[in-house]
Length: 159
Ligand SMILES: [Fe+2]
Figure 1 (cartoon, rainbow, N blue to C red):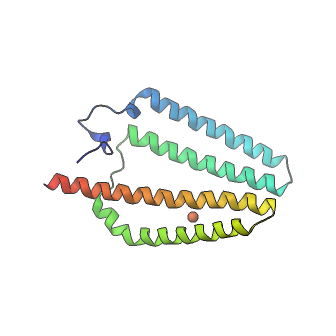
Figure 2: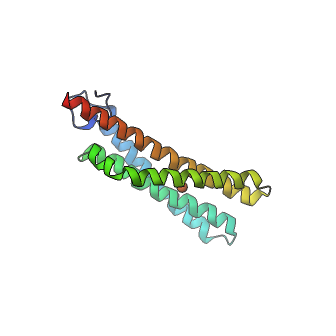
Figure 3: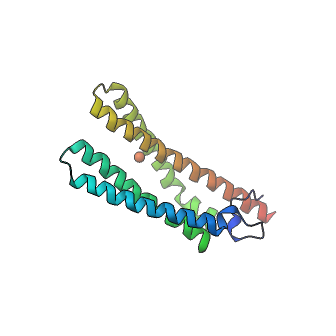
């Protein structure tokens, strides 16, 4: 079974992502993140307000992460795509499962604190953390689906 998830090295029709236009737009986006980082740093240097500093720090850190992720998107399209074997995933399965549990617990803490919070600043920061924890859980869930997909397609290949 191959529904296109491994379409990078293949006989299949070229995916839209392989086009120079697509890759160029990711590169432009990457530059945009770089100027967002510079702008955030500039704001940080001009304020002593800890809440603004923290907000801009968080955004700058996120933009740095975005640049790394964008680079991996580009690399996966222009260099050899990272290959994740089902054996490799099976080996990590226990650690990943532990991590899922930890993230789920962190999310419960964050949501409980947000529910209890009444003041605007803690609520603002807690809402940010809730979204981050949800994001972590979601990513791990997707990785898990990917793992299942890999297992299915390698079983299919053996048939
Ligand atoms: Fe987390």
